[in-house]
Amino acid sequence: MTNHTVDSGATLRSVIAALGGWRTIELGQPLENGMPCSPSHPGFRMALLRRHGDRVNAQGGSGANELIVTGGHVGTHLDALCHASIDGHMYGGVDAHAASVGGAFTAYGVDTVTPFLCRGVLADIPTLLGVARLEPGFGITAEHLRAAFGDTVPGTGEVALIRTGWPQLYHDPVAYVGHETGVPGITAEAAKYLADTGIRAVCSDTIATDRILPGVGHAALPAHGVLLVERGVHIMEVLTFEELAATGAREILYLAVPLRITGATGSPIRPLALVPEAVEDAS
Ligand code: UVW
Image 1 (cartoon, rainbow, N blue to C red):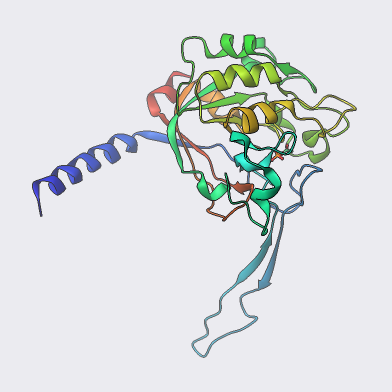
Image 2: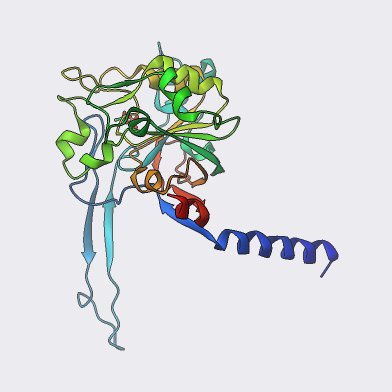
């Protein structure tokens, strides 16, 4: 064993020991039949194909397994840059049609997205405005974001977590999706402000990140165009920041990993926040 290996091991143990005093908070929603799903995407289904006892071996053992069917943008997920185009072009001017010939994107697919292990900063807009959750169709502006971040603006390679309080409606898929009734979200101007900070991703607790105006539906998503197509900033959706907000923590260690689905436009993720216990105690 070399000295380098010994030092690495010691460093690793001290990092792990330090994180041992930290609390892990789930930022994603469970995947289950009947959960909210955007009208633009196929839903999620899980069916047990084999139950215990369906096939039993000579030793009395049996295995159970399931079939899972899902869209890439269903539940808590990440949008790869190839998910959106404007006038036939994706981020960097790539021809969207040419990049998808063959049934999988050859540019900016979700398999090219490396894991997120970085600082995340929460913009808690309901707390800023003194409400439980934002109104349907409410537009979060750059001014709201500046006020919510204060002196903890996220920076290059980091992620911004935008809280609307909308997961309070997650049990009601029609209200949560808000196709007719609307959903709060960021404006295109707010998306430009976020991209200007240098962040790698915007994480939202709604199904579309963009605001959905009542009566307008999910057809127009201008912040998607700014982030994915013009600025190369990923989007993660259907997160929840309710538990995190209650701790009082505004800066976290953010962890999320998309699946390496070759040439896909999106992937389920399981995002986590790590916060020091001291922050939790302070809330
Ligand atoms: C919606 O806009 C509903 O989701 P996505 O951005 O993944 O298409």
